[in-house]
Every structure is written in structure tokens, then in C-alpha cells.
Length: 221
Image (cartoon, rainbow, N blue to C red; front, side, top):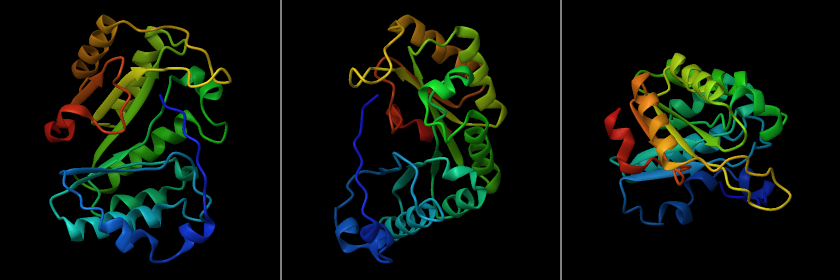
């Protein structure tokens, strides 16, 4: 897990042409995969979903064969914001539950919650046929095996397709300490378990905490 320091600019975010700006679209996308990542809640009324959607549409017009994943906030639980993004030619809707249910209040921003995260993932899946959904969990924060199984089962119950599991690393002394360094063998166990319960693809390993799935996981869905 990486620590990120985020600065915002209301003038930039609210500019109507920003999502489709020539600066953004002239970057020259040479790969078949691109990620748009929201690292914190957006203070715009729609949670930033409109900007996400316009950017996705602009990129698809520029390069129709590109696969686009958006790693989103919880949009404050506003499901209409999820719908806006899902219907923007998006390929993969990603939102991370981060940790098991018991540790949510310790690990995550108090404004978000386990059930709310599950609700937006479920809504994304139900809002558009064929929408690929994805989530990620950090290990080594003090979760038990039973708690991790419960979290994985909860994700499968709402038909999440892709799961990534990775090692939590303490970014600074001010952050939560690492409770356990999970072994590669244990990560392999969780990969097998995830595939057994129905995930289409599981990326599980010490360096498995990824915004983008390795090995083109979306192609297996």
C-alpha cells in the first residue's frame, strides 16, 4: 500500500472542458488498458462521477479498443453516481473494501463503511449487463482467517468478478503498524480459496495490491 498526498483544485475540477481536455487526450495511450483512480472522496455534488464518465467517453472515442477501469470512491453511497459512471462505456468498475468487516473503523475513513461499499459494488453489477466488478483487500492488519473468508464470501455474494489481495505496508510511523507479514504460501492458499468460491480471477501475493490486475485478469471474466 502506498501513501498518497492529494491536492485539489476546485477551478480545475469544475472546468467543464477538463475531462476531455486536449492535454489529457493527447497523452498517447499506447496500451490496451488504462486506469482512472479516485484516491479520496470528491467534494463535487455528484462525487466526481460526471467527470469520470466524460473522461471515459472521451477516451473511448479516441481509442475504442482501450479497456478502461475506474477505481472509485464510495460516492457517499449515492447510487445514481454509480449508474452515471457504469453507463459511460466503462469496462471495469473497481471499489476497494480494503479490509475485513471488524477492522473497517480502524483502517478506513470513518465516512465510509463495509455495507456501503458492498452496496455500490452490487449496484454497479446490476446496473449494466456484462459490467466487470472488482475489489481489493489488504492483508496483515490483524484480520483472522475466518474474517477474511467472510469478506471474500460477501464479495462473491454480490457477484464481484475480480479480487486482489496484497500485503499492507506501513507508509509512515504515523500509520497503522503491520500486524503480520503474510507468507507467499498463505497468499497462494487465498488465491485457491477465491477461485474455489467463484471469483473469475484472483491476484494474490505480497505485491498483489494493485490498481490494475496483473496477467490481464479482465480477459478471463
